[in-house]
Each structure stands twice: as C-alpha cells, then as structure tokens.
Image (cartoon, rainbow, N blue to C red; front, top):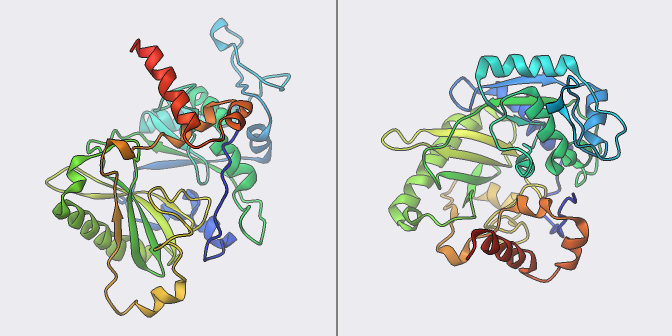
Length: 328
C-alpha cells in the first residue's frame, strides 16, 4: 500500500511541535471531566512495539492454530507482544468493543482488512499494522515543524459508540480562541437538514457554547482544530471527538488552508477578539458535491495512483468497479 501524498499548501501559521504534542490524545484526554468525550483507556508502547509498527508487511503473532495464519510482507516472522495483547484484551473485557487510536490517528484506512469495532487484541494489532495513518503518526507527525521530536507513543482504546445522528459530526477551526470555520465532517454524503439556515445557526451556537464553556477553559492551545458530534434531539448534547493541530497535516475538508478564512493571520483574529466573529459554515449542498472517502486512496497500489494523476481519475475507476460489482 501507498500513503496518498498531496501537495500541501503554505499555511499562514507555522506548525509547532508543542501544538502537535498537545493534540496527542494522551495529552488532552485527562484535561476534561467525565462525559465530555468517550471513555478511553491507554496502553503505553515501548520502542520495540513502535518499531514493529514501522516495519514493512502485516504480521500478527498467533498461537500456531490453523486460524492464526498471518499475512506478512517482508517480515520473516510474526512479532509477538503478549504483555501488550493482554492489556488490550483486559481493556476490551472492561469497555466492550473499541476503536483503537495511536497518539493522533485511528486506523480507519485499514477497514479494507477489518471493520470497526475491534473485538480482540488481534483485531487491534492487525488494523494498526495495516494502516498508513498509523505509520504517519510514527514517522511523520512533526514533518511540518521546525523542531523534530520522538514522542512517547500510547495506544488509546476508545469505547465504541454507534452515532445515531448522521451528518451531525463537524470539524471546527479555532484561531486565537475564536471559532472561525465549521465544516461538515462526512463529505461523502449530503444531508438535507443542513441546508436549513436555522439548523446551521443551531450547530454554530452549540459548537460556540461548547468551545467557550468546555474546551477553552481546559485546553492550553488557542489555535487548533476539533471534531465534535452533536447528539440527537431533544438534548442535542455535544461530544468532543478529537483535537488536532492547526496546519496541513489536518484535513481542512470543505475549506482550504491557503484560502479564507483559514489563511487569515493570527494577529487579525486577535484584533477582532473583542468584537463579533461570524464563523463560516460549509456543508455538502447536494449529491453532486459529494467526495470520495480519503481512505480509499490508501487501498490502491502506488503504481495505480501514479497513473491516475488526472483530476477525478481514481474516483471514476472506483465508480466503475462499484457498478460492476453491483451488476449495474
């Protein structure tokens, strides 16, 4: 597999290593009281395990039974980490099925191998090993920072929740403490209720209140991105899904890092701090604007991606394959 590389834009604000560290889930999870985000347990990872994640191939140790055949690449043997596996299984016994996550990323690009949630330590290790997102965490998290670091790595195991309100997850961009932009998180679908100006105002109000009352008092950064989920009525409770650094390693979704409002210098937001900032809200207006899942790019060989460099080439290929599979 090949990690899909795009040309990163020049961002008005340089990424900082301290900001990247602050957005590691092991750094921010304990800053918030219970009920702000989903219950999570952590497993510290030693250097041997991190090196295993960096090695080529997908290899997970088993007990030697027929069902433990492993698909391996260049690794001669299947690695075994019994202590890590025992701790993962203990967490799953306590929390139930989980969503695994390294410091910054979850292996959602590896769902071609297994589907979430993970039911065992073997599921977790297979998904971590097969994920380009996890490999990026290990080797490239600080690529856009002037200072390179080797952080401590933690495996976060988050209790699995099935979201009951489709289209109600949003990526929010905060600059100098001001909510400046909100994007629909799932850009693969259009949700008609988001076309309603009243619904948009409710989303912005909920997110703004959550930022002011819950996130800003606890989180040390004033410039960052956050993912939130707004639950179904009548409570419309806001959940913190994730925090991410401001910069090109965070997908801007329906915005661009080199275009307004994300390219506005920080000092300009400082100057407007005493005034009213009207956040920009963007959503997928109709089916024609839906985008292919970014994770799909990670499921193609490098050679195919390089051949399909024209706009929409990979999307057209995926559509053709899906049509043939469905018999249409």
